[in-house]
Amino acid sequence: MDEIISMNDVTKSYEKGNIKALNGVNIRIDEGDFVSIVGPSGSGKSTLLNMIGALDKPDRGHVKVAGQNLLENENLSKFRAEKIGFIFQLHNLIPTLSVRENVEIPMYSQKIDSKEMKKRSFELLDYMGLKNRANDNITKLSGGERQRVAIARALVNKPSIILADEPTGSLDSENGIKVLNILKKLHDDENVTLIMITHDQQIAKMANHIIKMKDGKIIS
Amino acid sequence: MTVSIITFVIILLIFLSSLNISGMSTVNKDISAGGDFIVKSNNTIYTTENEVFFMNESIIPEIENITGVEKAIPFKETYFDEGVFSYMIRGVTSTTLKDTGTKIIEGKFPSNNNEVLIGRYVASDLDKNTGDSITIHNKTYIVSGIFGGNYQMDFEVFMLPEALNKTTTPIDLEDIELVVVHVKNGSNIENVKNSVEELHKGKIVAISNVNESEEYKISYESINTITNYLSLSAMIFGSLLLFYVMLSSVNSRVRELGVLKAVGWSNNQIITMIIGESMVISGITWIIGAIISVLLIEYIFPNILFLDIVWDIWIFIKALIIVIIIGMIGCLYPAYKSSKISPTEALRYE
Image (cartoon, rainbow over all chains, first blue to last red):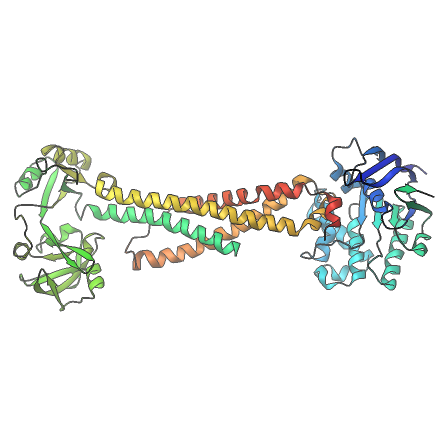
């Protein structure tokens, strides 16, 4: 398997250095891997995910994702649009838009024509079992349905890496299992690299590899 | 509320600009009082007693002898006060009536010195109809009819010249206030005007439009100045209001903007989105403002201000340009601020 993510001696601090979110982190993740990141609150899990997803830059160290050195990349938004799909704990859908419009948002950055946008969004919503809700406003959906819309949004640009930050954190157990099954199926069918943050040990065990963090360091 | 206020700004801009153009057009049409131009003394508040010039009957043959002049009609006039308004009284015969650019719309021309013909705006101001009595300079006259058709003269009262001479207000019977000049077909009006002014160079003036009359020009320049100041104030106020609204909008959508950045939107795309929203607000206000101002102008100009409506597409284009400027100024900083939002901080925003 080819390496898709590598981080060397990555350090990141906040509050003028008073909070060390990452402290000399080194990781290697192969393409197509399913990795869980676990650890207590404040251990640096989200910061690690933000580094991989090019949402933030380290104070020190190197980050290479999908063959690109992120510190040298001048156009990180384009990189994120092409390579990364984000799934957030609180889905972060836009309440004034419909289901389909929310799924299509990432495609605007790729300048895809409207016909293709509609085709892709309907295909994904069909995969998520939400094709009939395409024109409904997001506020009419349940929590589990919204998270499935968020997953569809994350996949719409066919990214090579999916980053999921506590994707079941705000869901009940039934919906949480549904979402996890979708993510697992995606990983198995599409061979995307899936990196998931979770507090739940049972969920973490679904992954091929588990990274444990504490105080900004990887402990196993 | 923002849309309402900026719409009001647009209505104000279009209405005042139309007022200027329609007002000038109406006065230009009526200023020559039915002829091709009028001749008046060039006396102003700065004219000294030695320099003051009054036209008398002798000026009529002088004017009529000029090449190109078909006829010159003299008008004597005085005025009377009713409440806070003053109305001109003009000596007119049934023959010279048409030279005033007016016609009788009700009743008939005065047949004796006890009758007067009143302009339609005098009739509406004083609530008079044909057959009513009207007191002028302590004498009671009967309204024989109502005339209309010339914006300025419709505010006047006509009576027979002999009746005018008998009004109790002292009047220099030799003075002519106004001469209406008709030019022969094929003659150049400007050349004839110049020749007339040469008769008493600097003392008389030939007028066929607003710009040739200091008296009218001052009024319209005042209105123009007021319009420009109001437009500028409206622009500044509109921009500030839109700035506040757009900034509030950006502040309330921090998390949403963070998501857009996280899924790959560039700073330029976010800036374009904010500017686009501002332009949509501007566009909507322009459309609503244009529709409402057209409706207002259609009603107010002819019925209340007694002006002919002159439509000029540039008024609407100017209003559109102004509203676009308001939109751009109002959204520049909010758009810049939105592009600087850090996605990681935005996603943690409550």
